[in-house]
Every structure is written in C-alpha cells, then in structure tokens.
Amino acid sequence: MSLAIKQPGQLMSSLMKVFYFKKTASLTTSLTDKINIFLTVDQSSIGEHFNLNDPAPLYKRQLSHQFQHYIMTSIESAKRYSVFYYKITCKSESDRQYTEAFVYAIRRHFSAKKLIMIER
Image (cartoon, rainbow, N blue to C red; front, side):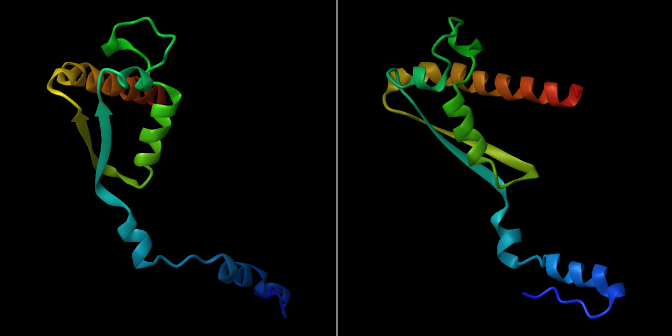
C-alpha cells in the first residue's frame, strides 16, 4: 500500500481510500439476534459464580469477576435488540433449588449496571 500523493489537494481523498472499510457479508452475519449463554449449576460449583467474600444470601450476592467476564465475552456479538437466552444445566434434581436465585442474581447485577450507565 502506497501513500504517494502526486498533488497536495488529493491528500484527503488518498487518506479516505486507505482507511475506507467495506462491509462484507461475513461481518454482518456474525452478529446475531439471539445469544445463548450456557451455564451449569450444582451444589459444588455454585460458589464459583459469586464473589467468595460476599456473605449475603445467594440471590443478593455479587457475581465473581470471572463469571462477569464469561458473560461479557458471550455477548460481544450482540446487537442492540438481541435476545439473551440463559441455558442452565442442573446436574441433579436437587440442584434446581439454586437456579431461581442464580438467575435473579444475574438479572439484578445487570439491572444495577444498566441504572449506573443511564445516570451517567
């Protein structure tokens, strides 16, 4: 790629040609309307999703940084009106007791984050 400019008046048009970005079909199709986030809940791993130093009940606990990072990387390709589906897998029937509090904690976390962004 060469930026040799023969006439000084063509500087802007030459720079526009260099930095011009053409949209390709692969770029537009990589963004999806539906995002699936896969989560596993069981008695031994439920603590990994939350801040270990938070003594609050399960539904009010803060999410761990690793879990937040997992969710944020899962939704990187989201559009403005994308729908998020949380696919939760329970290892046993007794692990279902954690799912409602777990989903509530996730919703609570991102609702609070949204409120902070709106106030700014």
